Image 1 (cartoon, each protein chain N blue to C red):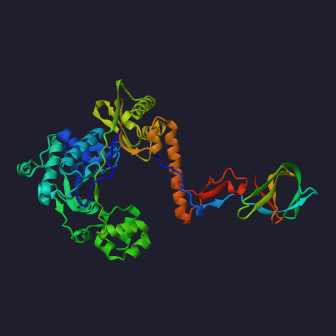
Image 2 (spheres, one colour; image 1 turned 135 degrees about the horizontal axis):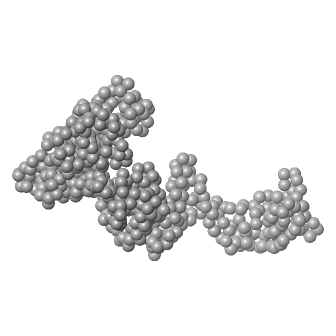
Length: 94
Length: 432
């Protein structure tokens, strides 16, 4: 059998990609994001492309999040989510 | 398919066989009248300059690299002959073949100089004196083109002295044996007994070291004349003045480097030739012919799975001379364009000195292709991919050496199906 040429995986050498960063988000009555506040500037949400919720890993440390795939003013697309356990908002790349 | 020995044989005890002015000696063997008076062989790269000159020509003031007009001005009776590098190479090859019968460990250094490994030969020929006789006998036989008979019995019937006048030096390590050969006289080899290398080397002038002129001048200004003077200095002081090269020089001078003779690998070459009905002088035609020959040679079944490491191109020129170009590729290739580019540059810089009657292309050494290349040898893109991967591997290695940690990483899929974006991909050190 031909061995795989790829580098063998070792968990301690992996670095996560696309880690979420904390965000300040203004929401409407329904809890949907209206704008993202970063570096003192407020960027309005122009379009909410998709909304979804995940409930995962309830058997250890539950992950309960509400996600929003949004387009900000200026055309930048980001993923915002609210951690429903802590109530904090987070942002990451699509 | 080619087979190349993976681990060449080596030998610490070395016999350096040196035939000075090898090209001139070849010409004198072929045309004995040249040995009667002052003679010179023209440079194979520039036929307006002399290359190798006889002793009698040197006495008149002629020196290598002089222009022909200068040389004739100094010595009107000087006999000149055009270089025939293909012939010299053939003679040297027959010499190597004869010496290969004496010892399996043979390392050619340059035209006319070869190192013969002597480790283990005492069981076949006897003591060092008899081993030297076997070598001399082999060289004489090669010179006369007769079958090898290097047994001690054969050597009892001594042949006349060789016209090649080989000098032989024997010592542990190539450098010391080379110095010994440079001090030896024809028929009187110098044997440096193990343990006496330092004393022998200490008496030699600095010029025996592989020095560039600038370093040589600096060493002389420091008042150093012999290897003993150099070896008497602290190694660190020489290193701090001359860097790593200085350290190597010091270690050579002190007899601390024993470079073993490494047997050469001799795969059967792939040869393609083309004879012209009418001699051709136009460079474009020659390059077209080379292009065709390279294509044919690369398509040879034995080349499959191997890249070319050493390329030779030969041209037989009308009126008996020849043209030779040899290339050893740092980055072996199977791409005809790269091989042809080498020949194009050489033909532009030093074209054949006359119209060409026959062209030959030889692949004389090979490097294995990648696994991918061997599996899909007909895939023209495979070599390019293998080359890119090699370049990447080298770059990653250099970065790791320079910054002492791997800075290159690549993205891998971890849980691409995950609903949590941060768990889909990760970075890992790039280790090609």
